[in-house]
Length: 197
Image 1 (cartoon, rainbow, N blue to C red):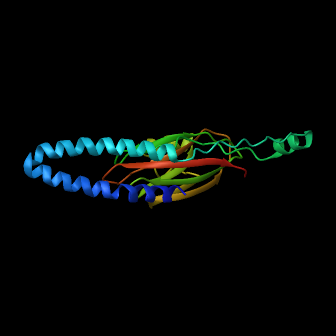
Image 2 (tube, rainbow, N blue to C red; image 1 turned 180 degrees about the horizontal axis):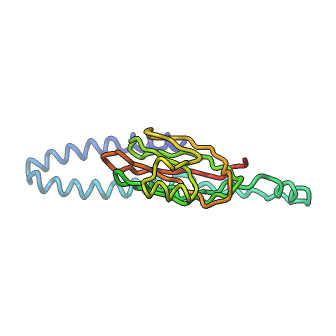
């Protein structure tokens, strides 16, 4: 319906537009191109504003619909309470910037028995390494003791990963982004959530 009114509007104004072009050419030969162009620009802008207002006024405005809210009973309330909790973010999404050859540790909001699920991705598709580890192992890695370092989950030299890991014991947990051996820095987005495990 709106499209047909616009087509009708264009068809009605087509002779006027063609007449405007003919007038422009004849004025340009008499007064000069610059003066005619300025005048044409002004008249064109004025016509554009007027036509837009006409189209907006002719478009029917839709009224918001009010949806009635159902009455809640005690049994409905019990059902709502028993539903699984909404998913919560485990850490900031980022992107997290990691300089070349550096290790960045991000503390996770995760406790023993919770399952962490989601994905990691480098914004430019560059490969990187990652680990999930407790605080003790994070310190070992930061000290450069890679042989003694033991993460609970990890990934090597890919631009994106999926992660699904249950936190096994009580500790402070960290996601570590590692660019060891890389020539350029990385920017990694982290989308982790708690899920029922």
